[in-house]
Image 1 (tube, rainbow, N blue to C red):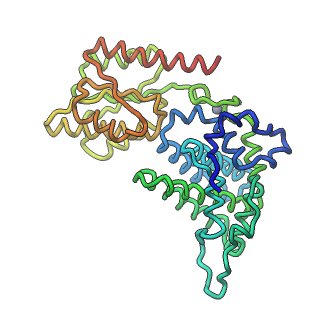
Image 2: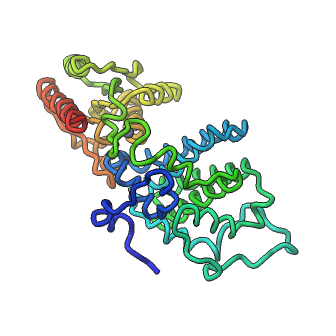
Image 3: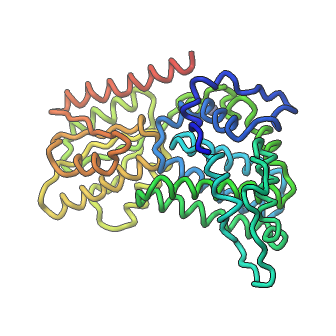
Length: 381
Ligand SMILES: [Zn+2]
Protein backbone atom coordinates (compact mmCIF):
# COMPACT_ATOMS: atom_id res chain seq x y z
CA UNK A 1 0.00 0.00 0.00
CA UNK A 2 2.74 2.41 0.94
CA UNK A 3 4.42 3.87 -2.04
CA UNK A 4 7.31 6.20 -2.42
CA UNK A 5 6.60 9.77 -1.45
CA UNK A 6 6.22 12.55 -4.00
CA UNK A 7 9.60 13.97 -3.01
CA UNK A 8 11.36 10.70 -3.85
CA UNK A 9 9.80 10.66 -7.26
CA UNK A 10 10.39 14.32 -7.83
CA UNK A 11 13.59 14.14 -9.82
CA UNK A 12 12.46 11.37 -12.08
CA UNK A 13 8.96 12.62 -12.68
CA UNK A 14 9.05 16.39 -12.68
CA UNK A 15 9.24 16.45 -16.46
CA UNK A 16 6.35 14.06 -16.80
CA UNK A 17 3.77 16.27 -15.11
CA UNK A 18 1.06 16.59 -17.73
CA UNK A 19 0.81 20.06 -19.16
CA UNK A 20 -2.38 21.71 -18.06
CA UNK A 21 -3.64 23.50 -21.05
CA UNK A 22 -7.17 24.21 -19.92
CA UNK A 23 -9.35 21.16 -20.08
CA UNK A 24 -6.55 18.82 -19.05
CA UNK A 25 -6.34 20.02 -15.45
CA UNK A 26 -9.04 17.59 -14.48
CA UNK A 27 -6.68 14.77 -15.47
CA UNK A 28 -4.01 15.72 -12.91
CA UNK A 29 -3.70 13.33 -9.99
CA UNK A 30 -3.28 14.60 -6.44
CA UNK A 31 0.35 13.47 -6.75
CA UNK A 32 0.71 15.56 -9.91
CA UNK A 33 -0.57 18.61 -8.04
CA UNK A 34 1.88 18.03 -5.18
CA UNK A 35 4.76 17.83 -7.65
CA UNK A 36 3.49 20.81 -9.54
CA UNK A 37 3.41 23.00 -6.42
CA UNK A 38 6.73 21.49 -5.40
CA UNK A 39 8.28 22.58 -8.68
CA UNK A 40 6.64 26.00 -8.62
CA UNK A 41 7.28 26.90 -4.97
CA UNK A 42 9.80 24.35 -3.67
CA UNK A 43 12.69 26.75 -4.20
CA UNK A 44 10.86 29.57 -2.50
CA UNK A 45 9.85 27.41 0.46
CA UNK A 46 13.36 26.08 1.03
CA UNK A 47 13.93 29.40 2.72
CA UNK A 48 10.76 29.27 4.75
CA UNK A 49 10.43 27.60 8.10
CA UNK A 50 7.52 25.20 8.53
CA UNK A 51 6.16 27.61 11.18
CA UNK A 52 6.02 30.33 8.56
CA UNK A 53 4.23 28.08 6.07
CA UNK A 54 1.65 26.96 8.62
CA UNK A 55 1.05 30.58 9.63
CA UNK A 56 0.40 31.37 5.95
CA UNK A 57 -2.10 28.51 5.77
CA UNK A 58 -3.83 29.94 8.86
CA UNK A 59 -4.03 33.33 7.11
CA UNK A 60 -5.43 31.85 3.90
CA UNK A 61 -8.13 29.97 5.78
CA UNK A 62 -9.01 33.12 7.74
CA UNK A 63 -9.30 34.99 4.44
CA UNK A 64 -12.13 32.68 3.45
CA UNK A 65 -14.36 34.00 6.25
CA UNK A 66 -15.51 37.28 4.66
CA UNK A 67 -16.26 35.99 1.15
CA UNK A 68 -18.02 32.98 2.60
CA UNK A 69 -20.16 35.12 4.87
CA UNK A 70 -20.97 37.35 1.91
CA UNK A 71 -21.43 34.24 -0.28
CA UNK A 72 -19.19 35.91 -2.83
CA UNK A 73 -18.20 32.98 -5.03
CA UNK A 74 -15.82 35.06 -7.16
CA UNK A 75 -13.70 35.62 -4.03
CA UNK A 76 -14.18 32.20 -2.48
CA UNK A 77 -12.72 30.33 -5.46
CA UNK A 78 -9.24 31.94 -5.56
CA UNK A 79 -8.99 31.79 -1.76
CA UNK A 80 -9.87 28.12 -1.69
CA UNK A 81 -7.25 27.56 -4.39
CA UNK A 82 -4.69 29.31 -2.14
CA UNK A 83 -5.60 27.05 0.78
CA UNK A 84 -5.04 24.02 -1.44
CA UNK A 85 -1.70 25.37 -2.66
CA UNK A 86 -0.45 25.82 0.92
CA UNK A 87 -1.61 22.31 1.87
CA UNK A 88 0.39 20.93 -1.08
CA UNK A 89 3.42 23.10 -0.30
CA UNK A 90 3.48 21.99 3.35
CA UNK A 91 3.07 18.34 2.32
CA UNK A 92 5.89 18.75 -0.19
CA UNK A 93 8.17 20.48 2.30
CA UNK A 94 7.57 17.80 4.96
CA UNK A 95 7.77 15.01 2.39
CA UNK A 96 4.26 13.79 3.17
CA UNK A 97 2.64 11.32 0.80
CA UNK A 98 -0.71 13.05 0.98
CA UNK A 99 -2.69 10.76 -1.38
CA UNK A 100 -1.74 7.61 0.55
CA UNK A 101 -2.29 9.19 3.97
CA UNK A 102 -5.66 10.64 2.98
CA UNK A 103 -6.70 7.33 1.44
CA UNK A 104 -5.79 5.44 4.60
CA UNK A 105 -7.38 7.97 6.93
CA UNK A 106 -10.82 8.20 5.30
CA UNK A 107 -13.33 5.51 4.70
CA UNK A 108 -12.85 3.76 8.02
CA UNK A 109 -12.02 6.18 10.81
CA UNK A 110 -12.97 9.56 9.45
CA UNK A 111 -13.78 12.17 12.10
CA UNK A 112 -17.45 13.11 12.21
CA UNK A 113 -18.00 16.86 12.34
CA UNK A 114 -21.59 16.57 13.54
CA UNK A 115 -22.48 13.59 15.67
CA UNK A 116 -25.30 11.54 14.24
CA UNK A 117 -28.16 10.49 16.46
CA UNK A 118 -27.94 6.76 17.17
CA UNK A 119 -30.82 5.86 14.87
CA UNK A 120 -29.06 7.57 12.00
CA UNK A 121 -25.69 5.96 12.49
CA UNK A 122 -24.70 4.24 9.32
CA UNK A 123 -21.76 2.05 8.70
CA UNK A 124 -19.08 4.34 7.33
CA UNK A 125 -17.89 3.35 3.90
CA UNK A 126 -14.87 1.11 3.97
CA UNK A 127 -11.93 1.59 1.67
CA UNK A 128 -13.10 -1.40 -0.32
CA UNK A 129 -16.36 0.40 -1.11
CA UNK A 130 -14.47 2.90 -3.24
CA UNK A 131 -12.00 2.77 -6.01
CA UNK A 132 -8.81 4.65 -5.20
CA UNK A 133 -9.40 8.33 -6.10
CA UNK A 134 -6.83 9.70 -8.50
CA UNK A 135 -7.73 13.13 -9.82
CA UNK A 136 -8.77 16.01 -7.58
CA UNK A 137 -12.31 15.58 -8.89
CA UNK A 138 -12.19 11.89 -7.86
CA UNK A 139 -11.02 12.94 -4.39
CA UNK A 140 -13.78 15.50 -4.09
CA UNK A 141 -16.42 12.93 -4.92
CA UNK A 142 -14.77 10.29 -2.68
CA UNK A 143 -14.75 12.57 0.37
CA UNK A 144 -18.27 13.77 -0.30
CA UNK A 145 -19.43 10.14 -0.54
CA UNK A 146 -17.74 9.28 2.75
CA UNK A 147 -19.47 12.24 4.42
CA UNK A 148 -22.71 12.18 2.46
CA UNK A 149 -24.92 11.99 5.57
CA UNK A 150 -23.03 14.67 7.51
CA UNK A 151 -22.72 17.02 4.57
CA UNK A 152 -26.47 17.05 4.09
CA UNK A 153 -26.72 18.91 7.41
CA UNK A 154 -23.50 20.90 7.19
CA UNK A 155 -23.42 24.53 6.07
CA UNK A 156 -20.29 25.79 4.29
CA UNK A 157 -19.64 28.14 7.23
CA UNK A 158 -19.77 25.24 9.69
CA UNK A 159 -17.31 23.35 7.53
CA UNK A 160 -15.03 26.40 7.49
CA UNK A 161 -15.16 26.67 11.28
CA UNK A 162 -14.26 22.98 11.56
CA UNK A 163 -11.39 23.49 9.12
CA UNK A 164 -10.12 26.47 11.15
CA UNK A 165 -10.05 24.28 14.22
CA UNK A 166 -7.97 21.68 12.39
CA UNK A 167 -5.61 24.34 11.04
CA UNK A 168 -5.16 25.67 14.60
CA UNK A 169 -4.51 22.13 15.78
CA UNK A 170 -1.91 21.68 13.04
CA UNK A 171 -0.04 24.79 14.22
CA UNK A 172 -0.15 23.56 17.81
CA UNK A 173 0.92 20.00 16.98
CA UNK A 174 3.85 21.31 15.00
CA UNK A 175 4.82 23.81 17.68
CA UNK A 176 4.81 21.11 20.31
CA UNK A 177 7.00 19.00 18.04
CA UNK A 178 4.58 16.09 18.12
CA UNK A 179 5.13 13.17 15.80
CA UNK A 180 5.19 13.60 12.04
CA UNK A 181 2.25 11.19 11.91
CA UNK A 182 0.05 13.64 13.84
CA UNK A 183 1.03 16.46 11.48
CA UNK A 184 0.37 14.22 8.51
CA UNK A 185 -3.10 13.17 9.67
CA UNK A 186 -4.05 16.77 10.43
CA UNK A 187 -2.97 17.89 6.98
CA UNK A 188 -5.11 15.13 5.46
CA UNK A 189 -8.07 16.39 7.53
CA UNK A 190 -7.53 19.94 6.25
CA UNK A 191 -7.43 18.63 2.68
CA UNK A 192 -10.70 16.80 3.33
CA UNK A 193 -12.30 20.02 4.62
CA UNK A 194 -11.10 21.91 1.56
CA UNK A 195 -12.71 19.30 -0.68
CA UNK A 196 -15.86 19.34 1.48
CA UNK A 197 -16.22 23.12 1.31
CA UNK A 198 -15.80 23.01 -2.48
CA UNK A 199 -18.45 20.29 -2.64
CA UNK A 200 -20.90 22.15 -0.39
CA UNK A 201 -20.54 25.24 -2.55
CA UNK A 202 -20.84 23.13 -5.70
CA UNK A 203 -17.44 24.23 -6.90
CA UNK A 204 -14.99 21.88 -8.62
CA UNK A 205 -11.71 22.28 -6.71
CA UNK A 206 -9.70 21.00 -9.67
CA UNK A 207 -11.09 23.73 -11.92
CA UNK A 208 -10.67 26.57 -9.44
CA UNK A 209 -7.13 25.56 -8.52
CA UNK A 210 -6.17 25.39 -12.16
CA UNK A 211 -7.78 28.76 -12.85
CA UNK A 212 -5.44 30.38 -10.34
CA UNK A 213 -2.36 28.16 -10.61
CA UNK A 214 -1.88 26.97 -14.15
CA UNK A 215 1.80 26.33 -14.72
CA UNK A 216 3.15 29.46 -13.16
CA UNK A 217 3.01 31.54 -10.02
CA UNK A 218 0.03 33.91 -10.37
CA UNK A 219 2.03 36.74 -8.80
CA UNK A 220 5.33 36.76 -10.72
CA UNK A 221 4.21 34.71 -13.72
CA UNK A 222 7.28 32.45 -13.46
CA UNK A 223 7.23 28.67 -13.64
CA UNK A 224 9.59 28.55 -10.68
CA UNK A 225 8.73 31.22 -8.15
CA UNK A 226 11.41 32.78 -6.01
CA UNK A 227 10.53 35.10 -3.14
CA UNK A 228 13.41 37.41 -4.01
CA UNK A 229 11.85 38.20 -7.36
CA UNK A 230 8.20 37.71 -6.52
CA UNK A 231 8.40 39.95 -3.47
CA UNK A 232 11.35 42.33 -3.82
CA UNK A 233 12.81 43.46 -0.54
CA UNK A 234 12.51 47.04 0.55
CA UNK A 235 12.27 47.11 4.33
CA UNK A 236 14.62 45.82 7.03
CA UNK A 237 13.76 45.24 10.65
CA UNK A 238 16.75 46.10 12.84
CA UNK A 239 17.22 45.15 16.46
CA UNK A 240 20.20 46.28 18.50
CA UNK A 241 21.34 44.80 21.76
CA UNK A 242 21.57 46.82 24.93
CA UNK A 243 25.32 47.07 24.66
CA UNK A 244 25.63 47.42 20.87
CA UNK A 245 27.99 50.39 20.39
CA UNK A 246 27.02 53.50 18.42
CA UNK A 247 29.69 52.63 15.88
CA UNK A 248 28.21 49.17 15.38
CA UNK A 249 24.73 50.66 15.04
CA UNK A 250 26.03 53.14 12.48
CA UNK A 251 27.61 50.52 10.21
CA UNK A 252 24.40 48.47 10.11
CA UNK A 253 22.09 51.40 9.42
CA UNK A 254 24.51 52.95 6.92
CA UNK A 255 25.00 49.72 4.93
CA UNK A 256 21.26 49.05 4.87
CA UNK A 257 20.50 52.57 3.65
CA UNK A 258 23.22 52.41 0.97
CA UNK A 259 21.59 49.24 -0.38
CA UNK A 260 18.26 51.03 -0.59
CA UNK A 261 16.59 49.57 2.46
CA UNK A 262 14.24 51.48 4.67
CA UNK A 263 15.08 50.45 8.22
CA UNK A 264 12.62 49.90 11.06
CA UNK A 265 14.30 49.91 14.46
CA UNK A 266 12.49 49.10 17.66
CA UNK A 267 12.93 52.30 19.67
CA UNK A 268 12.61 50.54 23.03
CA UNK A 269 15.97 49.06 24.04
CA UNK A 270 14.56 47.10 26.97
CA UNK A 271 11.43 45.17 27.50
CA UNK A 272 9.36 47.27 29.88
CA UNK A 273 5.93 46.06 28.95
CA UNK A 274 4.23 43.65 26.60
CA UNK A 275 3.16 46.55 24.39
CA UNK A 276 6.78 46.75 23.26
CA UNK A 277 6.50 43.19 22.03
CA UNK A 278 3.58 44.15 19.85
CA UNK A 279 5.65 47.08 18.54
CA UNK A 280 8.31 44.56 17.51
CA UNK A 281 5.69 42.33 15.88
CA UNK A 282 4.29 45.27 13.90
CA UNK A 283 7.75 46.27 12.70
CA UNK A 284 8.71 42.71 11.70
CA UNK A 285 5.35 42.28 10.01
CA UNK A 286 6.13 45.29 7.84
CA UNK A 287 9.64 44.09 6.98
CA UNK A 288 11.07 41.83 4.27
CA UNK A 289 14.38 41.05 5.99
CA UNK A 290 15.73 41.36 9.52
CA UNK A 291 19.09 42.15 11.10
CA UNK A 292 19.47 41.38 14.78
CA UNK A 293 22.61 42.35 16.67
CA UNK A 294 22.36 40.38 19.89
CA UNK A 295 22.99 41.75 23.33
CA UNK A 296 25.95 40.39 25.14
CA UNK A 297 24.16 38.80 28.01
CA UNK A 298 24.75 40.67 31.20
CA UNK A 299 23.46 39.83 34.63
CA UNK A 300 21.61 43.05 35.47
CA UNK A 301 17.83 43.13 35.24
CA UNK A 302 17.98 45.61 32.32
CA UNK A 303 20.32 43.25 30.48
CA UNK A 304 17.88 40.43 31.00
CA UNK A 305 14.97 42.51 29.72
CA UNK A 306 16.90 43.34 26.57
CA UNK A 307 17.77 39.68 26.15
CA UNK A 308 14.14 38.62 26.45
CA UNK A 309 13.10 41.20 23.90
CA UNK A 310 15.68 39.91 21.43
CA UNK A 311 14.79 36.27 21.99
CA UNK A 312 11.21 37.22 21.21
CA UNK A 313 12.20 39.27 18.17
CA UNK A 314 14.39 36.48 16.81
CA UNK A 315 11.64 33.90 17.19
CA UNK A 316 9.12 36.26 15.59
CA UNK A 317 11.47 37.00 12.66
CA UNK A 318 12.03 33.32 11.96
CA UNK A 319 8.29 32.67 12.16
CA UNK A 320 7.35 35.58 9.91
CA UNK A 321 10.20 36.01 7.40
CA UNK A 322 12.27 33.71 5.17
CA UNK A 323 15.13 32.12 7.01
CA UNK A 324 17.76 33.15 4.43
CA UNK A 325 16.79 36.78 4.92
CA UNK A 326 17.45 37.08 8.63
CA UNK A 327 20.93 37.86 9.87
CA UNK A 328 21.73 37.45 13.52
CA UNK A 329 25.07 38.80 14.76
CA UNK A 330 26.66 38.06 18.05
CA UNK A 331 29.76 39.45 19.68
CA UNK A 332 29.94 36.72 22.26
CA UNK A 333 28.78 33.37 20.89
CA UNK A 334 29.56 31.61 24.12
CA UNK A 335 26.71 33.39 25.89
CA UNK A 336 23.27 31.94 26.39
CA UNK A 337 21.19 33.74 23.80
CA UNK A 338 22.95 32.34 20.79
CA UNK A 339 22.91 28.80 22.10
CA UNK A 340 19.24 29.25 22.94
CA UNK A 341 18.49 30.20 19.32
CA UNK A 342 20.53 27.30 18.03
CA UNK A 343 18.51 24.90 20.16
CA UNK A 344 15.17 26.49 19.36
CA UNK A 345 15.82 26.26 15.62
CA UNK A 346 17.89 23.13 15.56
CA UNK A 347 15.91 21.61 12.70
CA UNK A 348 16.32 24.75 10.61
CA UNK A 349 20.10 24.95 11.02
CA UNK A 350 20.14 28.57 12.08
CA UNK A 351 23.31 30.12 13.44
CA UNK A 352 24.35 33.56 14.57
CA UNK A 353 27.36 35.17 12.89
CA UNK A 354 30.15 36.12 15.30
CA UNK A 355 31.92 39.45 14.98
CA UNK A 356 34.72 41.11 16.92
CA UNK A 357 34.28 44.84 16.36
CA UNK A 358 32.45 47.43 14.26
CA UNK A 359 34.80 47.03 11.27
CA UNK A 360 34.38 43.31 11.28
CA UNK A 361 30.60 43.66 11.63
CA UNK A 362 30.61 46.06 8.68
CA UNK A 363 32.46 43.58 6.46
CA UNK A 364 30.27 40.65 7.47
CA UNK A 365 27.01 42.54 7.01
CA UNK A 366 28.18 43.83 3.63
CA UNK A 367 28.86 40.28 2.55
CA UNK A 368 25.35 39.21 3.64
CA UNK A 369 23.80 42.01 1.61
CA UNK A 370 25.99 41.25 -1.42
CA UNK A 371 24.94 37.60 -1.27
CA UNK A 372 21.34 38.72 -1.18
CA UNK A 373 21.83 40.99 -4.22
CA UNK A 374 23.62 38.25 -6.12
CA UNK A 375 20.88 35.77 -5.34
CA UNK A 376 18.26 38.20 -6.58
CA UNK A 377 20.19 38.99 -9.77
CA UNK A 378 20.61 35.29 -10.51
CA UNK A 379 16.91 34.67 -10.07
CA UNK A 380 16.09 37.53 -12.40
CA UNK A 381 18.52 36.33 -15.06
ZN1 LIG B 1 5.96 34.18 -7.68
